[in-house]
Amino acid sequence: MKNRIKWGLIFSLFLAACQRPHEPTAITRGFYYWKSMLTLSATEKQALDTLQVKKLYVKFFDVVWDANHQRPLPVAKVQLADSVATWLSHHPIDIIPTIFITNECMQSIDSSAIPELAGRMHELLTGIAGLFPGTASIREIQMDCDWTATSKNNYFSLLKQLQTLSFFQQKTLSATIRLYQCKYKERTGVPPVNRGLLMCYNMGNLKNQQTRNSILEAAELEKYIGNLQAYPLPLDIALPLFDWKVLYRGQAYAGLIQGLPDSLLDQPNISRKTSSNTFTVLQDTLLNGYALKKGDHIRQEDANFEEVIQATRLLRSKLVTPSITVALYHLDSLTLHKYSTYELEEVFNSLH
Image (cartoon, rainbow, N blue to C red; front, top):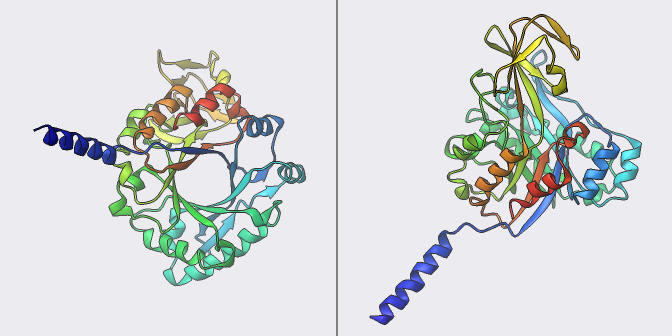
């Protein structure tokens, strides 16, 4: 009887250990840099130093679809300021070249043209990488595409083709993974890469006026990560720091307002709904270059510290990758001023 109890207890403990998610044992800190001119302010340099950031995901260029010529077109190529090149040569930060490809491009391109596209991307990538100090030390390249079930074949073919080219040899190829791509992996497929980076933001319906915060809501995130442990790629995590304002005109989505200080909404021409992040324009007005009309509605959206921490608590119990990168989007002086160093440290550490 005692032996049966003993072995039953051992079996139960073994089963529990097998089912328990592994806690990440190591976290590498990263930031995204998503501007076409790479210049670092004193605030941004200090943040990289103080927070001991080891990775900087730099968007090298975009690939969009040129409808006039019916072909892919590289745009928004990053330029590197001389002062930044000098600063980077004295700071041990891994540069991760990142390329954004529109889903329209992957849907529109003929599959026979993919090898040519890969070659053009490879040539441009190596040229830009040569501007950075320590090009030979680049160990990872990331592809960013909001692919769908209808574009996955072309996108996955492109990823495979890129990996045959010289600059990709002996390097990690990672791909960004949207939340819906993770949850519905049977439909959208799993990209043929070494690692995925789960983008834990932009999860709500931006164009729906009833949405509270399309950037980040922990309750919305929870709907997508119930089976996160089963994703067949090791996953890194990207978390948001940014904010924006969503404009509605005539009850319809009318675009994003970016770089507009919150303080400019505190004026007689604009009213705020009680206990809400929604504002109404009371008369035509010009704010920071934005022409607003009477009756316009503005929804303020951000990723506040409490919401980000709540999201990381949900993620922590689901992650099974033993060593992860936590990347914050994105490195920008105005954004950094909204968070204390303590809060940013907490965000990085909260997935331990």
